[in-house]
Amino acid sequence: MCSSPCLAYTTKQLNYPLGLMISASHNPHEFNGLKFTVSEVDGARITKLIIEKLPELEQQDDKAQDEA
Image (cartoon, rainbow, N blue to C red; front, side):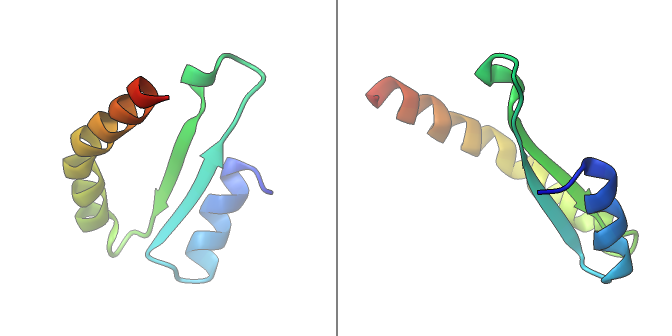
């Protein structure tokens, strides 16, 4: 477990193209999610891929919740 700043720092220091964490909270479940940290070199490319994939992931999540 680590904080968001720790994830960003570690991603950069270890020269990883992407850092990802699952965010959880004492708040209702709709406030939980994923946090991405991307490198300065690959960040634009990776961010674009994530944004393009989000609608599909959201549909999969909605379908899974409907089936539950």
